[in-house]
Image 1 (spheres, helix red, strand yellow):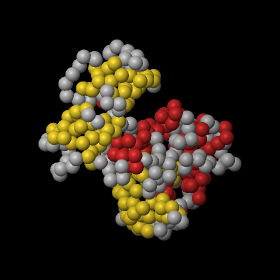
Image 2 (tube, rainbow, N blue to C red; image 1 turned 90 degrees about the vertical axis):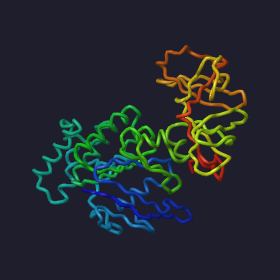
Image 3 (cartoon, one colour; image 1 turned 30 degrees about the horizontal axis):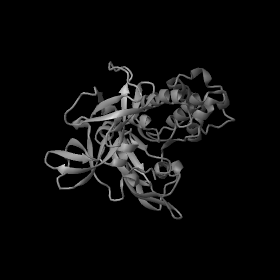
Image 4 (tube, rainbow, N blue to C red; image 1 turned 180 degrees about the vertical axis):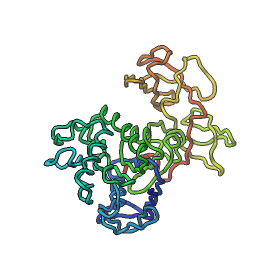
Length: 366
């Protein structure tokens, strides 16, 4: 079964570096997503693994076999493009059985394979249809099972759900993950959709500007991101420029005149830091509340966002924080202009050294 190793892959287009010495490992039967903004190099990376693009430097290994320079048709990988790319002159069944027939399978065996694949996505009655007669979601399901029919145990998915509407995309991503698991495949899934990556992956690779920023499980990247860029790109966070005024295991920060207690993660002394906290971890308290990490402010805006209500709160020192409150909260509804107290739990405050290039550059998408 496939174990993939990418070692020092680089790819340049003139002065543009699409990949910069990227190294990565994918374990057997693992579902790994590559997440990042547009233009970060994630599609270039899987195209190098597939053999669609040849890297300028580095090697690609599958099961310790060096595939660098091996033609795409000899790599034995299944590839699903963002564009459906079904043959318009062929029926759905013929699209699925095309790969097996090219490999020399008998028509009867290839037809059985197509029926099995269509059964997996509950499209048994559409085998004789043409792609133009299917919905966008059904077309992408056919494209996926066509890749399964290739017989490859390594599946590469290049934003396979990106062209679909939100509801269909949410449905198909869980079906896709279940199919990969049921068939015992190894999958690498490129996406710019954070929710998609977090909900279906064993691990997630976060990329920026041709490099890997961080790799971890969805829970690790959301709750304990090691990099500021990850905290900003995976989910949402409030970032606060601060100074450490008292060190030790529990440090005290000065945030433009407000005191913030936090757990000190640094083994060496540093003064300038960035504190981060996700909006859903901030509690809105009654105005009379006081104590460590309770800050006062006034609600500037209120936005209904389905399952949550987003508040923008202006603090007494002029800073603004975003707070998310579940719609099912039993707390009374708050209005714009109302004075509130915010509580920032110590266990949810993330602390980072202040980046040399500045905070804005660190969280920039390019």
